[in-house]
Length: 469
Image (tube, rainbow, N blue to C red; front, side):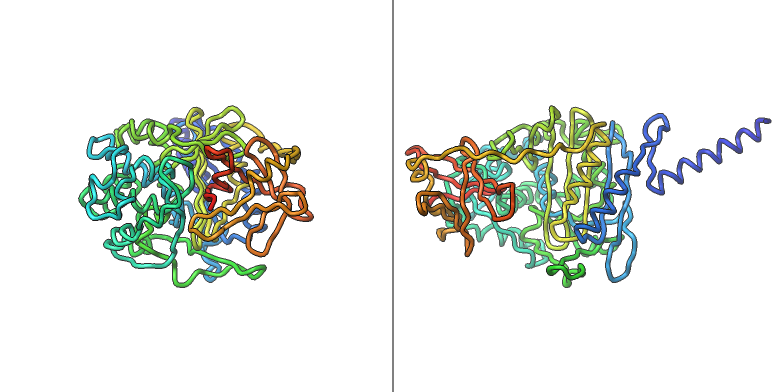
């Protein structure tokens, strides 16, 4: 074959590889194809079983995006397919982005994380003014949790909302317990806004999105709607999913869960994160910000040792350090998982309220780490409780002054009452308990943290704590 013929075939092969990558068949370094067939099967099946209209998935390995593809539809009304460049609203994975902006300001010496935020913002309610950014970003401020999906849309809304966090929003003293609180991130974002000297959405764009090359990522709905956008969906019972109308938005809550982004832009964030803030050979973010975010700050009450840094949950998964955050909001769900020591990450975005597509995310992480799925965890075994123990646990627990959950002793046994439901309680270990629903083998776990007097002071379930009344 002559030189001209060889060049022809080289061009054809190059075009073939490019077309495969565009179609969702990515290439590893060295042009080795990553077999994604199992991931695609799992994703399509999970969309079906969870009644999620669509999703986008990206895999990052060794500083490169090795897979980025959309699945399903962006809207049940139009049937338009999801693409990798399509925007979704993230929910609480926004918190790692807000934390990155605020901690970067700290790294540049523009603020300190361990001083009262009243140092930077005047006229805050007394208890809030004494909270530190460390406490707000690590969910250890003592603020109760809430999230309001619908509200105002202008830049003044954030400051107005933060100033409503009066002293009664604190259900306990700061630095006592980890308890996930969206309002803490509203306040942290507002401090970032004041120190940066521009609205929160602009501060995020100028200090984070643009330096990282996250070209379509935004807080502003009127900007997001100019790009391909996956519509948010909800569902009633077994009825088909429907588009949420009007779309939920509340600028007063933006720092806790409202970024619009796509898997391609988020991949740039995690690549920079794993590379000490460097992307495309440039220092886009301070290297120290990445280290501070991923350093454990507070202990999380969980079955396996878990901590929270700034905008990141930190745990060990079968010997590998994992940094994660999930998101759930009206119309959408998301998850980001980073294994920094293996230079691997998985991003999953979905367009149904609370949809996490956990099987898809687990399969994807297994692919980039070269390991099998999570092993089935054994059903925990109950251990005996004495009558004295039960007396120390019994009580009502709350974040608001009104009992959210009660532990009672009935006929010599501990039970949990929440709303109209009363279920038996079993002890599973030190501080670890479970409520047993009829017909289920696996208990719903919770934790009881004792106070100085030995009685349970906090009831912890999921990521939230409730204090004994």
